[in-house]
Amino acid sequence: MSLRRLNGVAYSIAHKFAASAEFFIGLAVSHTVSRGEADLLTISVRPADFAIERNLNLLCLCRESLLTQMRRFPAVRLVRAHLVLELDPAAAEHKPDGTLSVPVRITALIEDDRGSPWSGTVESRALGVV
Image (cartoon, rainbow, N blue to C red):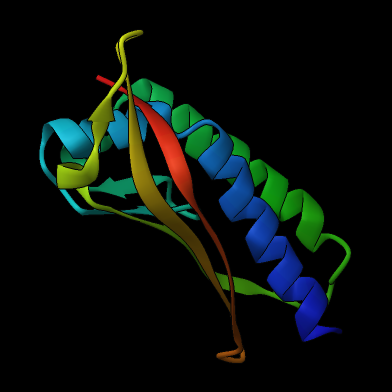
C-alpha cells in the first residue's frame, strides 16, 4: 500500500469538498469563524451552527467518495476522517453578484487503525454564499 496513493485519496476528498463548500464558507464568514471541522465518519460539524442540510449532504457525498476509493485498499481500516476548513473572514471580498471570494485552506485528515495518518490540502480563493 502506497502512502502516496493514500495521500492522493485524502487530496481528492479535500478537493471534492472545496468544489461545493460555498455555504460552509458563507457561514464561516457571516459568523466570523476562521476554522471549521467536519467528521466524515459520523457526519458531524463544528461549529454546530454549520450543520445545515446542504452542508451535511455535501459531507455525505464526501464520505461516500472516500469509502468508494478506500475499496482499493482492503487492508486499511479507517478510524478517522476529518475535514478542516481554515479561512480569514476579514479577507473576504464581497462580489456584485452576492457571492464572496475568500482565501481558504481545506485539509482532509485521515487515519487508519494502525495510527498511520495521511492528508491532502487544497488552498485557493473560494466562493461563498451569504
